[in-house]
Amino acid sequence: MKLLEQSSPLPLKFYQRDTVTVAKDLLGKGLYVRKNRSRFLCEIVEVEAYLGHGDPASHSFRGMTPRNQSMFEGGGTAYVYLIYGFYFCVNVATEEKGVGAAVLFRAAAPLFGHKEMQRNRKLKEPHRHEKLLSGPGKLTQALGIDRSFDGKKFTSTDFKIIDLGKVLSESEIGSSPRVGISKAKSKHLRFFIKNSPWLSR
DNA sequence: TGAATGATCACG
DNA sequence: GTGATCATTCAT
Image (cartoon, rainbow, N blue to C red; front, top):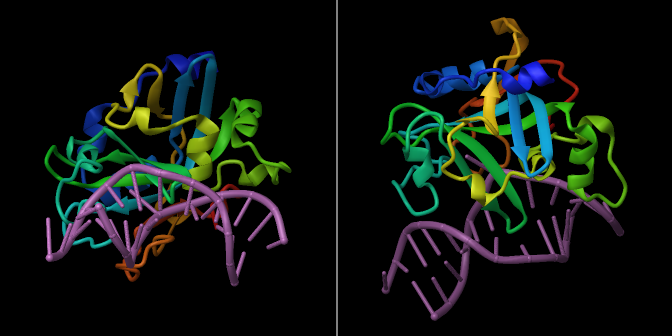
């Protein structure tokens, strides 16, 4: 853990590429968050791409607004927003500054800080282990990610994505339509690690 | 399946 | 200002 904590974040250049490429490359990477006295690490297993042009399901479709401006701030910027009045969703912006594209983190496997994640989830009855981070709202709740993270770069010492040394082949990556949207249902922009027990659906 | 709960944005 | 919508989750 100590080594992982000290390992370098992926550089901004990693995110300043084609959104679908970045989305797939994020699978198997580590998301590290240090907040107050808590430290969390998890492995990303499911993401969704939201494109900068011609994607009606993307928050950026009608241009920049106060809420979505982090999507336009260039690859590596966090875009965090409140959904349904209850939960936060966390994205990482992709491509160049000015392009409103991002990748949503939908599910992850816990690697460190498991017990505190469980506590943060505030469930009446704890769910199955595999469901701890199996959805965008669960993931942010467990890791304590809220609106204060919006606009932050993913290259901070206390908020970063790191390489876990895992190499995925194309055949290990599945794709499907994105979840919970009403538009552009035919686009297959959800990507996940096949057979992972930690997926959202 | 339905309820909870509030920010956001397109209207005009 | 108003109202529909919403990249969700949990418990029934």
